Amino acid sequence: MVTTFKDAFGRTIDYLRVSVTDRCNLRCVYCMPPEGVPPLAHDDILRFEELIRVVQAATALGITRLRLTGGEPLVRRGIVELIGLLRQLPALQEITMTTNGILLAPLAEKLKAAGLDRVNVSLDTLDDGRYRAITRGGELASVLAGIRAAQAAGLEPVKVNMVVMRGVNDDETLAMARQSVARGWHVRYIEMMPLGAAQRVCMPDEAQPDQTLDAGLVSNDQVRQEIEAHYGPLEPADVSGVGPAETWRVPGSAGSIGFISAVSHGFCSSCNRLRLTATGRLVPCLFSDRELDLRPALRRGATQEELQALLLEAVALKGSGHRLAEHILDTSHQMSRIGG
Ligand code: SAM
Image 1 (tube, rainbow, N blue to C red):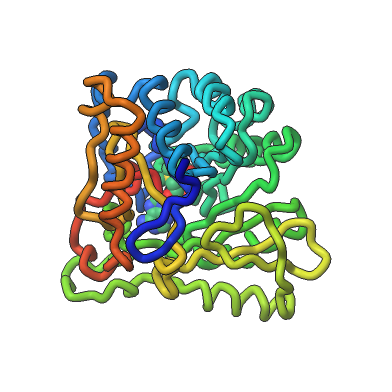
Image 2: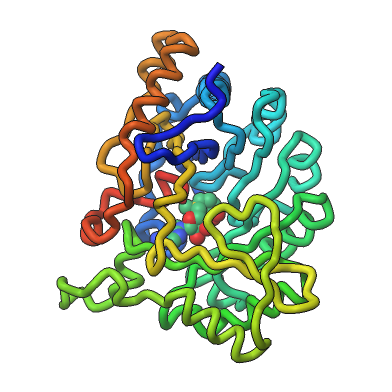
């Protein structure tokens, strides 16, 4: 049995991000167009048994960690049941979820009981009005209740992901760091990637088509400088499931602070992941032009060996780096479809 899954550049692929739905209960300005995205037909979305078969094939190749995403994963009907089914796959060492947290409070305990290990909650501001504006209508109080419920249910470490946007929320990076001290949050600052709807946010000047990809970027170096100017030097922190984040803490705090610097530093050389969309397309890289559609194979009853061969084919499509700059004006790469 193959237990390590390597790509052409020697990187071990052990992490699969699965989008379980294209639907979302928010329409964040940098993630979706104002009118939302047309919902897919029910039959276009992978059924649970299809999804499980893909994950099973992936674990046979060496995938040990799974993250459920969306759309918004908590709007997928039966999500608790799905986690219970995934938990039965012995090779899966970790099942996590990225959620906007709106529906998390009433579900946190059930998710934990079904086998979810931990959650990342996306939260870009601590201000009610700003939250409503960024998410086009979301209620901040529901997310804060969701984070508290996740902590109480033991879905720890609860990571809170903040996408930092110039002129939108970059005055709140310190307030967010304070939550790692006050509420034990594991805050992750994410550099906004200029793809899909985000291009309108990070490149506000449409009259200047030749703006560079970092025109609206707030780099994590800047964020860190601001935090250290207030708290003094951060100390290294050891947090489980760190992924591409570098993690630190304000000395003495229960939470941590991490920086995911895909734009300013990049971490392609240690990329360990594959993505599966809700319709069953394998995405080798967020910026990939080539995807591999598993759904036809699944629906004609492909064997586990055939599915494994398709997974290997998708891994072979992974490039050495993300070529982000080439996608700057390409609107086909919507995060809401691929799942971030
Ligand atoms: N609905 C869930 C949520 O809100 O976490 C999961 C899907 S969402 C697409 C996953 C993550 O992608 C969120 O943390 C979101 O902030 C992030 N994201 C979306 N567009 C982004 C962009 N252009 N750059 C960086 N992160 C982005």
